[in-house]
Image 1 (cartoon, rainbow, N blue to C red):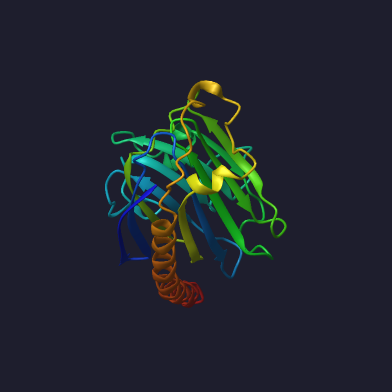
Image 2: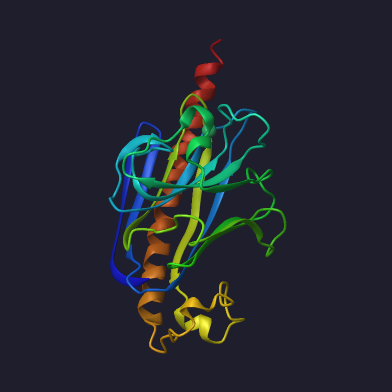
Amino acid sequence: MDFLSCAAHRDQLAGKFGIWGIIAFSKTHALSQIELEFEIHGAGNLHGDGFALWLTKERATQGPVFGSTDRFEGLGIFFDTYKNNRPGVSFPYVMAMMGDGQTTYDQAHDGKANELAGCSARGLRSAPIPTKARLTYFQDKSLSLELQYKTEDTWTECFTLNADESNIAIPSVAYLGLSAETGELSDNHDIISLKAENLYSLNRNSNGGKGSSDGRSKGRPVSPKAPKEEGSSWTWTFFKVIMFFGAIVGAYFGYTIYRTKARSSRF
Ligand SMILES: [Ca+2]
């Protein structure tokens, strides 16, 4: 993931928000990692609807898919906290959808028709530890998602996909975004931090990395001149921006809950 530019925007439209930055996966077989720390919490028994992490070709605007545009092109990771209709599946449910720019999100069935991969994550809401998601993308090879919500510093695998079997081609220049939706139900979706890193340099002396057993691209050397510094500064800038927006978003959803409560207490 190379540094291109850092821009974060936020839309706050009727209980929806978006934060967007741009990143580029320009190197073949580049290993990139996105780590997000978040907190989903709220009062009462019913909550919804969840939030989404995006890596899409276009910078999305307001829409029906966790607050963002439908018929998107690229990857959406949905942290769905409200079960619309998906019998036999426990919620919260985390899933990936690779949008082709035309397919509509199957909202009525919580994305069942679109699911690339997913997992139940009971306890993701109001977890006693900091909740995190880590997306590891080995371009042209694998895509995996791990979650942390049960025990601190313990990652639970949600899914791992191989390029041979699934379409994991994220647009080479992608908008990295976050959006959330609350409708009839409310909830707090606080974004604590978001880090995007190029792990090329780290991969050199680590445990070899995932997918290293696949010999097809073994011949490609790991670049010794990975732009680590650029990556780091970008991460830090984005982190600060997110912290700031996270605070505002938290405040806003706090207000939403208050308002919903006030409304329902009239009945
Ligand atoms: Ca849902």
